[in-house]
Length: 243
Image (cartoon, rainbow, N blue to C red; front, top):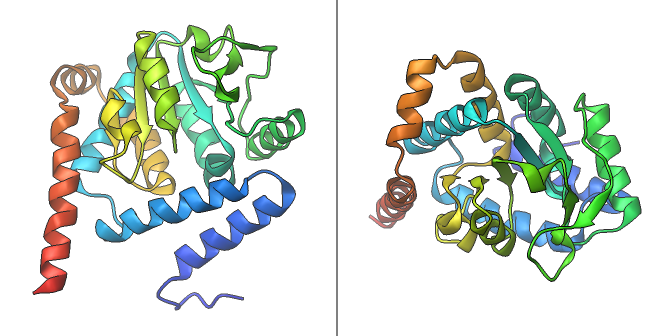
């Protein structure tokens, strides 16, 4: 039992949940490594949502609400960490939810879909085909799902699929704590924030945005600025720690 007053309470609870999901086959061992890498970057921004991340989250909501066919793409880590957040965002945005995996097996897809459905999400689970221009299993998606989407939200993404989706003309929204990653620098819009903080903020913005603010956010966002501001925030905190 982790005491609530432990200074690392949230982080330790998150690690426990990922470990349980790994034992069930929802999260891969490689996914645990990826989470640890992201957590290190979260330390550098103070484990909080910065002003520029909040701006990115509101912009993500604007893009989802303006889309004709938005899709939220979910992998094992995202499902383990934020299944309820995905369900809530789906309700606010009207986006399809589709499972897409690098380490893909039929059983693992079914486990993740069941976890999402138990959290209240309606998962799009039609027949998958190898449709994306990739040589690995993330090429598998649904023709009426991600393949046909105009806007795709990809929390905890891998860079090559992000590049493939952008090359297909899609607007790609990434949630990535590393502003230097290939995903962060390739995505149309990058949210440098932890996924369990980002998704509720996007959901709230979906419910709050007026059409005027939505259009303004879409017309004015600059992903280079958002990435640069995240790097400035990390650099400032490191400099302060060394003083």
